[in-house]
Image (cartoon, rainbow, N blue to C red; front, side, top):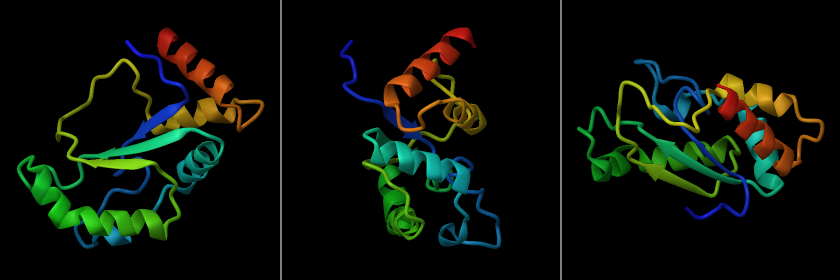
Length: 138
């Protein structure tokens, strides 16, 4: 398996980078989770690669990625821009599931706690070390 040359963070969008959309609001109205957005922007500005993968609208579009992009693509990209979220790429079409089981998974609160424990908030090597240590222990 190839090694990554730098820290690559893959983030969900809804209920991770932003609040859950309520039935009476549009995706353009959801609120960013400022604590995580600030961390992601800091890490991105210091060399981390940030990729967003979203299952947004996958259920209502029957897991059809093309329909998702047509339905919410522009709104989502505009929301990311309006809320000043730094990222390198976005993937629409994460399969909608009950849960995601992954050996590298962290919930937002766990990631924020690891970040807050860093002595140097811009040290990607220390971040990667602490994430790997946490994942090995849990």
